[in-house]
Image (cartoon, rainbow, N blue to C red; front, side, top):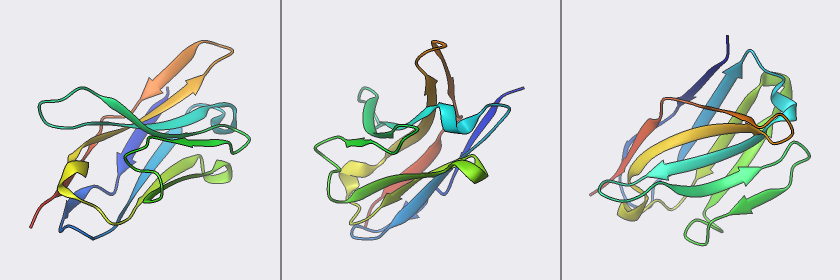
Length: 117
């Protein structure tokens, strides 16, 4: 059974940092592209960042330079380091694991990030 679990969310003040984790089991983690999405209140889901199995990264313009995506395939875990957080970053953050060749993907349950003063 595949499980994808996010953790690390919380309530912080503007300018603070958080690191989200995405732990997976039941899959060959290194074969999957890892992506972080977020769902801000009252808005549509958006792609935040992604990293392929060979380490190619991509970021949305709104987080580039502030967020860093990484992965540790030995631990079957992905990360999203978020720095200089602002209220605009408030959202539920979701981890998505995609195997493009097999055309399957898995989602976590989401973790809430709230940035306010």
